[in-house]
Length: 393
Picture 1 (cartoon, rainbow, N blue to C red):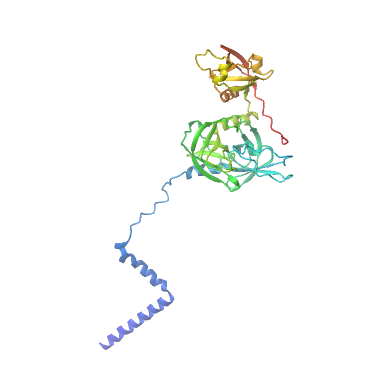
Picture 2: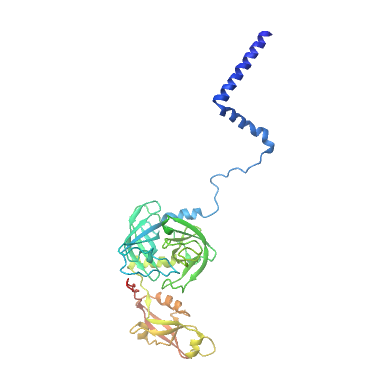
């Protein structure tokens, strides 16, 4: 019995010595043991947490649309010759300035964005981003860079077409701006303030915005997605990542976003790009008249119509000598009411209807002269390309 007690005492002594050594040299072993035992004792007091969702669960938001469109959106740096005098900037309320004023004699650097619309390297951007540039550099979101060739521009819609030569280019899918509705979610993708590619979200705030004095031909998509200098020429995409507009201007008194941005519908940009790629320029119809809006006061003063109903049309304020309208017999004071089968009630409608005509074609126009309705057959001319303002103006 005494021998058994001695063996027990020795065993306890060895175990205590081993525990002391472990506690001194490997205390974490004892902590791990206590950590595993703790839940058993505290099970009744634990709060049940929901399981971690699997990675395959679809997240709410527009990450998929951004991933689809962003690779085709590029940054553009355009170098321009130094101005001979103070150059005219874009309107301080509508549009973006070319950039901060540079010291005299130094080249200006314009920053903007662009969108690759075909795998062979065709890009869309704004004309004001590359206008007058001697060197245009494009940087893709994957870091590749290339010198861009200017294929052509259309200042009256503020669209420019560029081309780069790189392999395996991502191209954005084109959407249908005609199906957009106010309230649809849109994303603006570009390089604002040269901070790097940025995606902002908003909705379509309005459609068909015009008479803003930004471009000659205006049919803007208005959005509250944040658009800032450097976003010019970038993409406005729908919730599926398809291109629906080219961001071009903002309403701002400070130069930053106030939640009123404007984009050129992709339908317009596609038509312009197709014409530039095919013919090198956009050919629009022209009849050579100067117009004024016809107000009820003017109609009454000029004794237009039959007095029973308000005459709808556009007042001809002047006619260009030897222009198609002058040759057909249209005179100042006439009211133009119809172009072909399309009635016109505002100068903007008349401008768009005439521009859509094919040069060298013929069109019948309806005119009200005094109390008499008349019609004339016009040989449509080609709209003259707008003259660029010189640096000295």
